[in-house]
Image 1 (cartoon, rainbow, N blue to C red):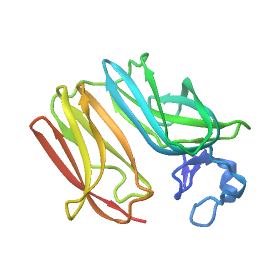
Image 2: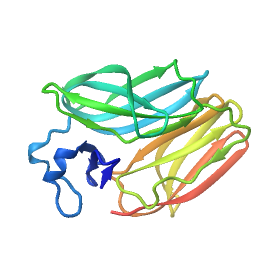
Image 3: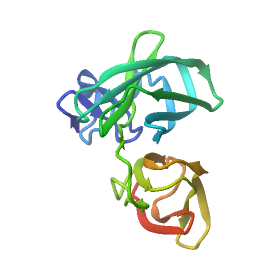
Length: 223
């Protein structure tokens, strides 16, 4: 499916490609990737509000001829502008971590994405993350979106005070699948992306603990 008439999303990788790449898509919208080079396998992309600035963090599982990441911001989720650039690691099979601070943001709500370039100038887009810089007045864990999902979903939560925050995913038998957050965080609104390429289809439980606050909800992976 097109995003704003300009980009197409491959349902297998979660990446967005230029409109021209849609000519290589199958009838279900999955891209035939023989002529398309994806610079990185993006494992996570998150946005956090800290001290009136937005901190972006992302991790890659592997990289191929990755020149770097153009960081883009939008106030409506449609029209994006470049606000910075972070060099990539070239070609590597080892996980890499990156970060970028947006200290010039005065908007209440904003959106971010990454434009990833290889050394030949080809590019692809990450998923979009949203943050709210308004100060929350209570703790709250929001249901993920989309749900059901594959291969990724966004989980948002609000912190009214600084707390040690722990967010984990469990299966319905109570077995821990992964830890998404385990650190002390300042007040603010947060959003994280959970990618599930190695997690089988099924119903899972997302649980958040922050001080005395406890909340959980069910989410469904549908492959």
